[in-house]
Length: 393
Image (cartoon, rainbow, N blue to C red):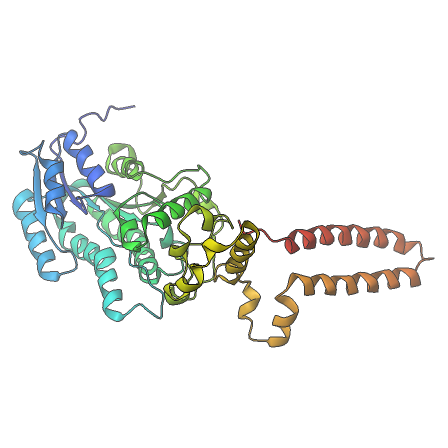
């Protein structure tokens, strides 16, 4: 295989969101490879730390990518500085957490600008300034292809980004420019700070996320950065219009759906892992402030009373309520909301089946059916028993 050791030497690279996370990792790699790198972001101090060892090949531009006038100035600066470019990496982005009801128009517009619109404007304006065999890499997320409650604007932006990547790849191919997307989630980055959760809840969230990743760990920014470098290299010369997932297999698992009723009604921002979670972490932080007076009596409870109290609070949490609770049909809700009711219904079905079998006891053709019914009853009893003894994991 052809060596790529000096492949990026003196290549002209533009990286947005270069002050932290994936953008910072990519900037460090390309600078170490001898490339001329333009670092774009709002945290100038962090970008200076990255480029201080490479004063001759690094340039820093402070830019708010939500403002058109600053985007236009950035485009002019890129053309004046480089004339033409080889690589564009769009890593800047922001995760705003809010549901449909509580996402105001100004918040939605801001999310759209920082996660999608600026990318469209940069590519639109710079497409004719790329050198032959140019490469563009956008950074997406798992939520670009799968839903996530409470991140409505972010999901829309990342879905749009992936669609834009595929569409633009077809158009830019005639200019000999490749455009791809790297999707990564979960990843340890500054985006977690904007969830506004305390450190203990962040730790809980990370442990919860690990359990949903087949490889059993949360990604580091260097993981998707390696994929970005690959997509900018000669080794990917025939790859364009693709969304490469670097997520430890997270996209292969189920959604982990939990009922979402808005932050004002949530007992905790994250799903309780098990009943002992209230013992492991500060129990006062996991409930609404209005309940603090009740919670002060917890210290006076003995172990049995505390266990019963914890189980009660979990059963009342928004995360533990059954989907049937949202059924508009009160009659159906009454029949389905309790495992005990389901078990009673099943006993009636079992009695009916036994009566039918007795009536047809002499029929040889029913022997096979009787065995099947008994097997089915045995399996369902086991299922019901396991459902009845609920464990919150």
